[in-house]
Length: 346
Image 1 (cartoon, rainbow, N blue to C red):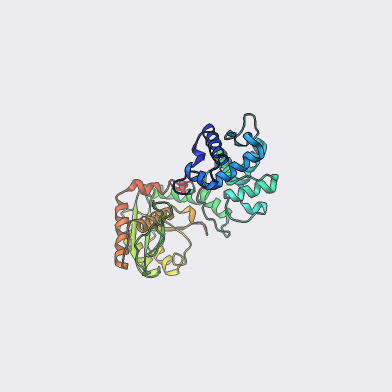
Image 2: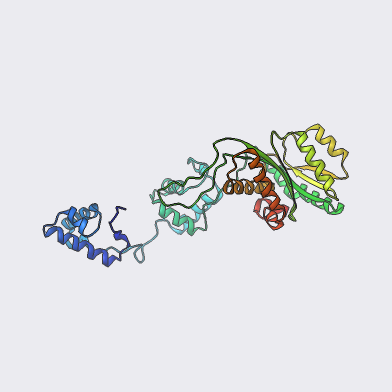
């Protein structure tokens, strides 16, 4: 909005009508439209529009219009159409209906309504419909095309239940393990700032990273190692050795299908230490089944928004500090098991 110009839309319908009549009267009294816009603190375009409305319809052209839908006026979409559209959005992807894009946006839903029913709605109206259907914008979970639904079903309904039962009989601890990398140039989260002024956050222009490997349990346990360089058999074996030496009971370790986890030397070590540890593999391409993925996201978000390391050593220390603090917050670790996809492990 132009500086010094009032937003007439904020006025009541009666006040808007009065303003329009006074502006038009001033113009007909000899005042130029530009001068009228300045005197009444409105946009010149508004003055022009009001004068044209008066010329076309006379006094009726300046009458205040009621906001919103008139009493008894029907919605653009019938209740039946709304039910079908809600089902389409909640249960399908845009591709199902020949539309582009992987996710539903207001624009995509508007296009679906246009294609299906020949009705053109603005994005605000579409958003109102979506909210009235009990829907909200959410970040989706990525699911690989290669994932085998039968393997996932078997894991949730059979395999994990068997592991849990075995762990109870042995008095063992179940841990979920994963690795992640933290980069110096990681994206910083959003921050509040004056509208139109992009905020600036100081960060090093150098690129470096460190890696973390964590194992968590649903009672709030957390064990970790922070390292540089590639994840390999030596790093993994060192972690397994320290883990089994630290714990006084057997561990059932749940991992993904990373090649290092399946390496022959690793399997031989696990067999040799069968009384202390057993390793189980999640279904392929199913990271959403591992609660440790949520810890990884928390770690990256916290480090990227609360620190600005200038060297790899500072980044490594920031990661260690976060994980050390997390070890003292078992409730926060347990919260990683609260998401629907991993609640089976809680």
